[in-house]
Length: 310
Image (cartoon, rainbow, N blue to C red; front, side, top):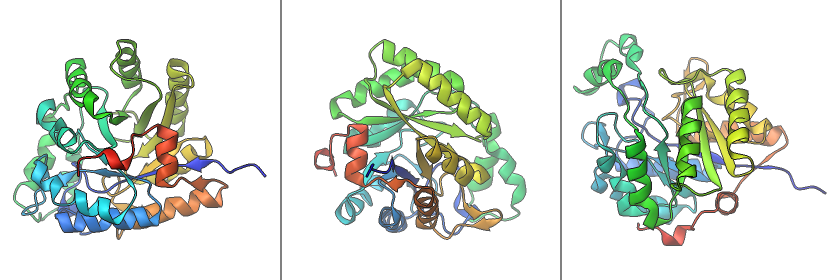
């Protein structure tokens, strides 16, 4: 009997886009981040994509001590692959953004493959009250931000993290980012097989239509042939539909409160684990199996959880 295809589920626990005001389920203390990460792994996520936040007010943080407050707990409680963000902030330098990955040497980390207008300012009009003082200005201010990821920045991240044998999750928000990645491979910054996260629905990036997924996939096939693995992140309401489509196209999926605060149209998710459980059920009902952490390690060529620094 033929083995069913394996689908890797990544869960993005808490990110730089959303603020605590927008959902009480979004974790921002170390205890809550660890608790939700562990629950997401128990629900079927083989990769945990992690940011840190300031525990006193939920603000975005790249402080290594804020990561240290939850990483050991996550490792002790689960065998999931830990993926640390190098995004972190729209305003900090790449040197600041890679510091957590440089310090803790995880199996994976994210890396944005191009500069872009990364904005979520329309969200500011949806709320009349804010939990913390910084939130409204932060959300409104994204209208004027450019998320800087120049070729020099990408080279610096690749060079600084090369000694750690970290597998990058190459985040591609538009088709030009795929060509940026191909150029970086051609000059030796990254080695095959690479892991690409196609991202749809962020204001400033490519839209969340299935036609765009097919276009991105065809472009990646042409550029990278058999030298890549891929996953799909659909922001907001596109999360579950695009993840479902990707799983049926042979891809992997990413869900989590970083990418969408909802479990269904107009209904806030209660936790990251609830989103993982939903996409797992969909994937399995449609004839695939969810990859275990060790299967994900084998599929992506990871160094193993015994070689991290936490």
